[in-house]
Length: 177
Image (cartoon, rainbow, N blue to C red; front, side):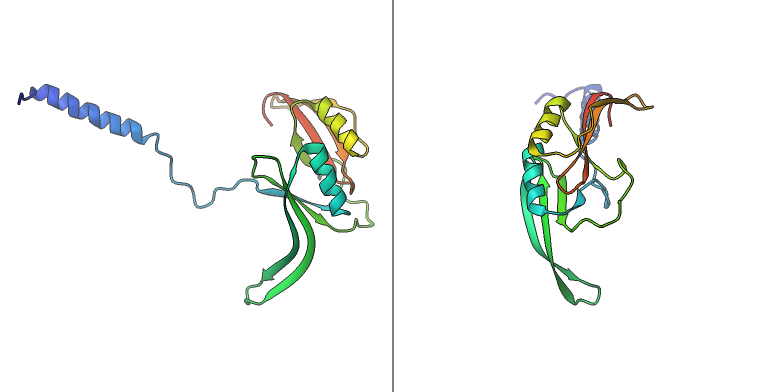
């Protein structure tokens, strides 16, 4: 058995140590206890079935779940059962949920226009707008160009769903939103 010279042995050990250190830089960091991310948006709608039909036809959302009852257990440990009419919709292969809950529209005028809305990214806004129109989207606005102070350029348009909820279609032309 041939013994390597001392310098070569030290160089080999140093190279191995360097490889271990470099490889450890690519090990995923431990997840933080609180890793916030968006989970869902909830909209009240007047007719759950027509809203499910509309969103699945207009935007390719898929019905993931219908909920007819919620059991809420308070701090005292006593459960209370609430009948509900809710649906969870998702885009294929995405975790983000559109939660719809049936509730008759209030008599008031509601929030200011364009502040409360659901935003949906699309690749071709003209084709998406046509699909929304065919599915029954109400009062669509014209497609317009929007530029932000941070350099994002987009095309957008708004329409109302079957219960009057406001939805924005947005095609990013450049930058990020």
